[in-house]
Length: 170
Image 1 (tube, rainbow, N blue to C red):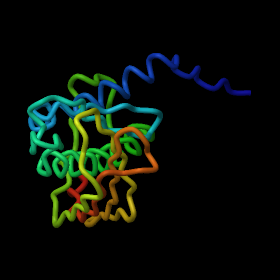
Image 2: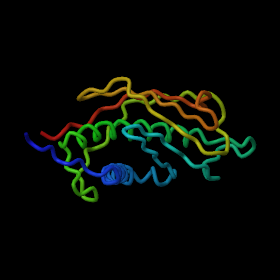
Image 3: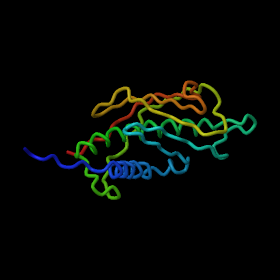
Image 4: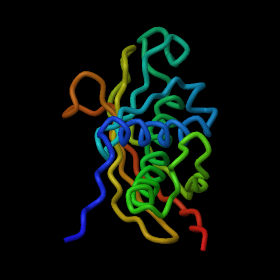
């Protein structure tokens, strides 16, 4: 009877996953400019855009700037696509994450088109978003994203995007 290797402690696995996600996110300077953060629960990501005055587009309402909202949604889509791809490789052992600080991450997907539906004004408060991958193949992916503030069932913006997926190394 062969012995199975002892699984890694949960905290070690969480730290490794968080470090890989952090490496992915810190590679995009615009994410830091917007102040966008990612909350990870297993393989699911929720994107958070904490409110700051610089995000206001119309100070009379006040309402979030449409460009900040669109960027928030697009960043959510791209990072979710990348994280899903990395997750599969990371968990199967294809991607070497033994040293998360020096992991070589794949290139990010490139946007083909991105359509935003502004459903209501974004209020001056934190915003949240989640992406749903509709289709993801070797070359192309389609993603749907929704952003909300106080109530997930009342999104203030939604988007659909199509992306060229980066080639995987041979």
